Image 1 (cartoon, one colour):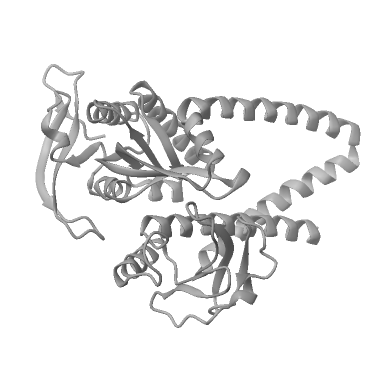
Image 2 (cartoon, rainbow, N blue to C red):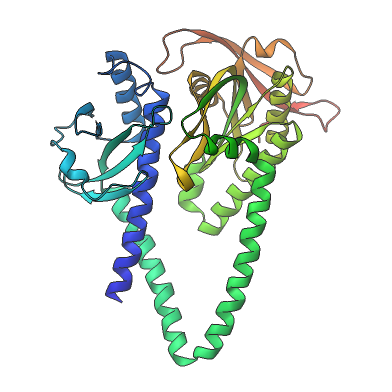
Length: 387
């Protein structure tokens, strides 16, 4: 039992480390650390510190392949010094591991090695955050699965033949489910774009697009009090509703992260299709326990494959992506916030709430934005939908 518990805990820690390193890699690319001069400029480092505060990171270290420091940042903490020797054993690109108390007491540090998408150069990353939340999550996950596997082991001792037969049926059902998930994702994601990006890992392309961000308002309070199955059902229904709306208007889902979705639209009529997809997404989520807010912004994006080989992940990056996310943060539930130039064509199912001049966080220039709320068109005297 002790061995099983340790194995499950180690798997959970490795999964967290891989996700943490991928998050940091995305931050560094979005903030321009890998595109500018070396050493990085003060403005780039300032943006990184802000991103660290938002994501809860305490310390961040970036080393080049020879062990030289590219960047070393601390968020209100005296971070201990790490060197290239810390990363021994992490030779494969995409490898990651989790270490306790190597930078600060009471903190976990994710260590990883990644390849830069353009140059192919290898860098080492160390991201440190407080251990309390992570330890609690890993402990709950480990305890749950240990009990599950222990129960299965006990049953197998009592009746091996019955368990094998049931296990085979379970595996068959799981295989069918996985195939179904893959088919669903193929409808939602740009398979050709992913394949093209992965086949040429060092290339990156620029193009004009409308980026759409959606996330569920007040989701955290729901997730804290609801059974896990209800939380999973809500996310599944939300993703299905949004993906359907995006697909109907010839958009592409780029990323699904927790209760947030990012999509983009290309072409001459991308503005109209993006607004229509946003309105349909809100309408489709009307019966859900939580409702989305939406941000739309048009501009240039960079498409690239992050990672290498089977770990490569197609995504879009750049200022346009960041601004769409900031506008999403300005929206209440069932609201759509977009730049003023996108709001020129008024839709009858959208009620204008306000026009404001704002300066999104981490951006220097002010911009004019318009906030809309979806109108319930089912009544003779339409009312603004409030959820």
